[in-house]
Image (cartoon, rainbow, N blue to C red; front, side, top):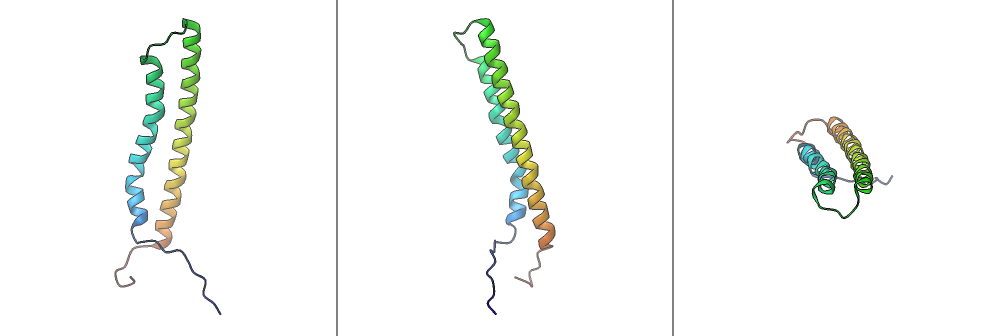
Length: 95
């Protein structure tokens, strides 16, 4: 009977990702926040009504991006935590 090959990853990769995941989330949330702030700070040649409409559109897009980022964060965190629980503690005798 032929053994099937399984993908192997270095031990501790999940913990490395889990420790850096909050930094990735904050970095990802800074993009839509800066996008919403820059549309207000940078000068525009639009009239007042068009400027408010543009700001509202950018705000909606920024909120949608932020919600998507948070959803991806929790999905990744759940997958990483599941993998850590599945693998169990790292024993040096097993490696």
